[in-house]
Length: 319
Image 1 (tube, rainbow, N blue to C red):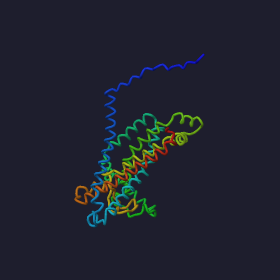
Image 2: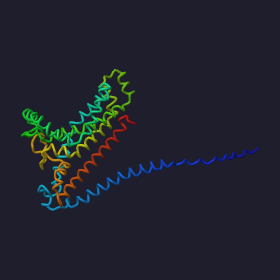
Image 3: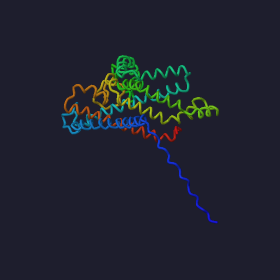
Image 4: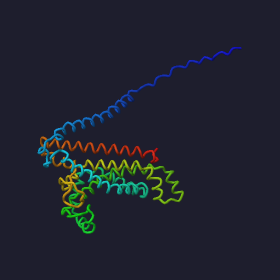
């Protein structure tokens, strides 16, 4: 008796999925949108590079502010930009963290909703309004406090005198920047805290943890990458702010870390806004070249933020 091999029964070919017109339009639109972002970024970078070449190779005497070359011109501006942004983050980060935690885990629901709306409304206030508030209200109000700081802790180089008589200092500008960074940082942190696993929070409370211990053990580890993202978004806002700094700050071409004096380093964005109308020739190219430096700084900050977020995501519990 011989065994006969069973022949596989032929299967009918699967019908091809019908591609609808709406799917094609949506797919094409998404591809074009993503490509448009890259195209705009490349065009902006090319414009900055091409217009910056005359300033990068300018001779002594052609650069504004009697600078010998472009790098001596832009150096104090880079320092002022980074210094003001760091000061703003030092002020804004703990405030944003505390406000976001209060809204998400401490405040009653009605109060949390009202605070959330107020924080979101702050993001819609124009920067010129913040600048006017800083120069007309904050600076005169806080100037006596600066005198008190110099009297008590003036031995610390950061708070050394003499104090600016108008209150228009780098610290005042940093406070204004911190207020401007609060809405976006608080909104991102709040949403991240609300996404923390409820089971983890309930388990910590069931084991006898206090509310703060529950937040420290269950919420903050989960939200670590989101906190980093919020801080970097605030840093990007602080680096690129123009009008508020131009209104509040009394700038000078200096590099110092004194917070309360009238001699304050300027920022790249504010310097471009103040000097653009009168710039001509190589002076205009110099401003554009400084914009290129700011573009590179912002790009490096975003790349560093992406690296940190991707590195910490595996340990945050978000996955």
